[in-house]
Amino acid sequence: MALTLLSSTSFINLKDAKSIKTLNEFGTICFAQIKPSCCLRAKNSTQEAQFLLEKFSVSEERKNDRIEKIHKLTTHHSKSTRVPVFVMLPLDTVSLGGNLNKPRAMNASLMALHSAGIEGVMVDAWWGLVEKDGPLKYNWEGYAELVHMVQKHGLKLQVVMSFHQCGGNVGDSCSIPLPPWVLEEISRNPDLVYTDRSGQRNPEYISLGGDSLPILRGRTPIQVYADYMRSFHDRFRGYLGDVIVEIQVGMGPCGELRYPSYPESNGTWRFPGIGEFQCYDKYMRASLQASADAVNKKDWGRGGPHDSGQYNQFPEDTAFFRREGTWKTEYGQFFLEWYSGKLLDHGDKVLEVAERIFHGTGAKLSGKVAGIHWHYKTRSHAAELTAGYYNTRVRDGYLPIAHMFGKHGSVLNFTCMEMKDSQQPQHANCSPEGLVRQVKIACRTAGTELAGENALERYDADAYAQVLATSKSDHGNGLSAFTYLRMNKKLFEENNWRNLVEFVRGMSEGGRSIRLSESDSSRTGLYVGFVKEKSVRKDKKAILV
Image (cartoon, rainbow, N blue to C red; front, side, top):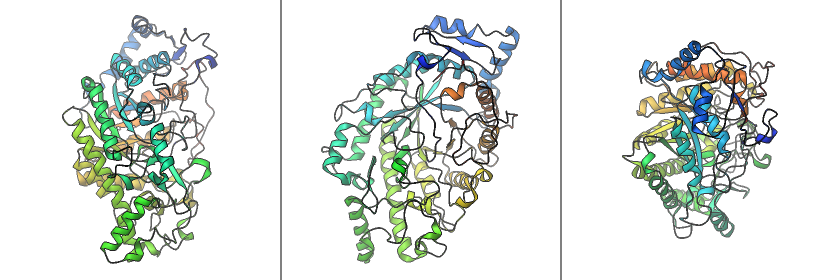
């Protein structure tokens, strides 16, 4: 995710819940959409789960009416207007040992989500967990348990092929590095990862500069990703297209098609800094030099721009990104075309192998593009440029990306769908609304399907209303699906749960405006400083997930 909230996305230890006495007595869930005080005692058998669903302390007539309204949305609304809603599962859904984390908690949570009319859930299939024991040694058992549980509850599953590291970015509540054998190769050859101008290495993702080189124990990174996806395909062949309805292919840090230009670990980057170009490993430098030689400009291949500033500067602080800066010169255009072109080529290669592997399974392919909305109102769009999106006041950088996704029949998943311009700090020159409009137009022009996510964990009326508005398909460019970030204990708090249910209902009606609570119990202080926060009553008996 381009930007996520600083809050725990891990499972909460059930021992910490005041309403839970033992791990065997799983706890209580409050289904606020039916009655705030109506609690459900959940255990881990199928019969008891069914029994519990029937024990809501409301009249049978009201209960049936409510459930019917939620569960018949798929038949009462046409596919052209209904926007299915998925919910991201915690980052540590599968433990470091390869097992499903807190299965009883997960079982009850999925039951709750199904009751709210949620279409399904999304989970990261971490490379660092599945292939950690050695090359071509895969352990999918924890994910297999999740697939069975999701199927039992009548939900669908989006699976992310997460070839990046978890940890070091806002919202990363746990640490899952790349596989140990990959880290060994990186220690021997540090140029396997992205590098900035000062020589700082970033271990989040393998540099795309080595895509076609056998640098991972005789295999190229593209071959490694292909083998991983093929193993997943073979293991879950019987569920693809039925339970597993989407494969989102990670193509960079945070699973997004971009360079790690704004690393948040160790305070390297802070919002709204412009970031830095990541083209200084030996493989990227060799590619740049070859491109410069091809146009008889040898000096242009010696490295990236020398005047592009540092991570936390503003565009006007640099000679490269300022209003009439180097970015507009012949050299600037050459460099930005090469830099963005390498990223586009990387996405093309990864999606090409994914398309071959999952063709005919019935599962959709998707990939994620970051919502880099700061400095969008400036001429150079500096933060987008360092991330690899050659988008400026005079050039559309998202249309080529949309065309590339469409070429492989892949959905383009875009973030920051919940943001409003008015909620952003003025000095950052943000325009998330303008950015989303541009991406929607690019996808419509390219004939590429568009889906969305929220960038921050938000529970307030403004955020939900903005997503509802964005999802509309007035000109054939609405959302095909929306994935909500993220399932945690706050989501099950009384007010937040009620808001989610109403939001899902609105999305089922093609973005119909609905009345939501004005309160925001998320306590989000990151880049949403103008959102009105009110005190809300917490439900201490909410399921802690």
